[in-house]
Length: 545
Image (cartoon, rainbow, N blue to C red):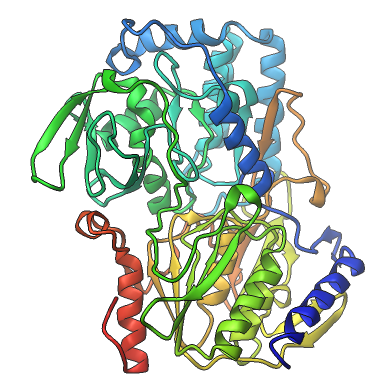
């Protein structure tokens, strides 16, 4: 197969798959329903664009910061900001609808400590006593948060999507991927600080690459975010992880987004080793800067353009014979573009090693990673199966939703036929993973690590390896026109371990490594450096990058 004919063949096969339509597994549609965090990658982009352009009302500049208030004062600020909202009867209907749906359908009670009936009793009594719109949104946000799953949310669109945190806005920024309101992009460090890896020039608070936000007003950020969770402050553009490490990561990395809540930002300066205390009043307002993917630039390889619907980019790392592929979502043309990139690099350019970077991937169609993975695999390799709830009254009894053959690599699935992909790659493959890989991003990471010469680098993915409520599955949670809600309605397991469900577990990373202050200050990507070092050792040539 020549370089010119492969994309055409892949395109024809993909079109055939589309024409075949939905394949039924039992009574459930299993032709790759979209399963991204917010309706899909495009919807995620739209929401973030709307948020950037939104102009919520702000309190006077001399009003006290939300973080310096007492809990009761914060509650009063939340009540005043969004007003009363719906009647108590309507709020109770919304609450009951969501709680009942999650009770019957949520498929990830495994590996989770939660008393779901007790939460109903606790929160319902509070709602019945009368709460404001903002307070009710916070209750619903944190009810869903107790299930600790990236796909599981209950959101008031005005409060949680359309109102951008800023001075006087009593909400908590959370999940600082894609955009951040602080004029910088940050990532989590093990000590609970948030590392600046990209920042606008002449930042008003003096932030520079390599600096770390330790906390605010003399208190560590990790303690502060847990206090805000305990107080059930409404959240903005909710994106938390499912594994325990990714859950913490998604909150720690959001330190910069919460500058509006506090008086003084505590910063560890990389250049001097000193801790400085900078008044947040120096911020002119929300500042959106760059695109936050927790990835540094790699010489020779350009990044995708997410807002333009371009999710895959590839190239060869400068000065090496090592290929590199970014995949930021599994929607649009990503399936074909990833397969073409894998083919071009391994079969045409014949690179000695390959890096596939999934550290940021918002998900999409769960079968989309299969074709490109098949080009790299030398044999079929069933990896995962997927189950759903068997009984609405039993949280743990499960039945088959998607059998393992659905995720078998080295074959292209067309209807009821498996067409072998007669290509393979014998070279080493470094798979970069992190908490920014969610949903189909998790599935793609699981598939690639099944390759015989693969090694994973980074941190655990979100491990949101389930399918959420969505029309493609014939499911919907109708809380009303001003609400968005869903739960994870399936759970995955590794082949050979059918009852050992993966949601709420950690992705098994071979080499735990993440961005460091020293490296980002110098413009280096610590995770990429570790991967290149390993690849060079495997192929026996070249220095580490």
